[in-house]
Length: 256
Image (cartoon, rainbow, N blue to C red; front, side, top):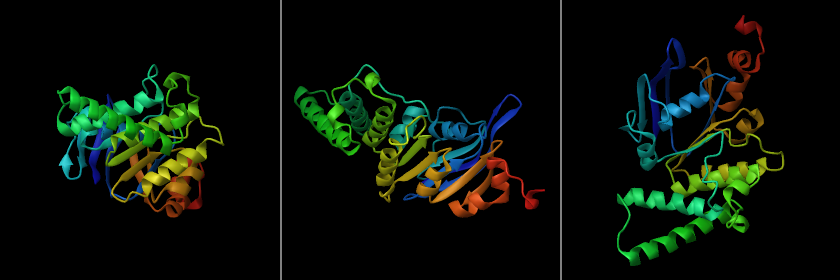
């Protein structure tokens, strides 16, 4: 469903992502881990179009999207959640999700309808779908609250709701549990598990909490200094001496 081929970006003399080649199948959740500065978020930015690649390709369902801007990648089926929530703070919770539904449907049709009756029917359908999504993320009771006034955990849930409203082929989560309390984390994990159950979708996850990674991931890839240093099943990757040295700072006899 998604593939990167020799994906690279340089900032002056610094190589932030160094010829990373990976293919990702639908129905899987891949965690991307590594120490701070390893290139994880930069790799995400290259895939989703926030940064232009210096070299290499990004392919979605076989189509080369390397030169497409981020909005067109979204219309092709890439959905991205950021480390810092990207919401419309002065709109209500329901309006945020309704706009995401509207953007998805307008993008699929190539533009909005112009006759008033169709617009009225569409708006009702968009609101109904937004309500269903808010119920699934346990925010329906806060649908009339402004996004800016939500506590951090609810803002993270709302961002997941926006992704669900876009109904992408690929869900990209960049540290979805960052800044959340211990009590709030299970809700986000349950939402991601529910998305993972859809076998026609792919989930990519950047996460520092290894207990979260071990619980959710089918596969782990490890970046270090921008390069891919490990790729495989979670238990094998975590036990790898190379990974323990790069990620956990543990030096074993095998790495000396």
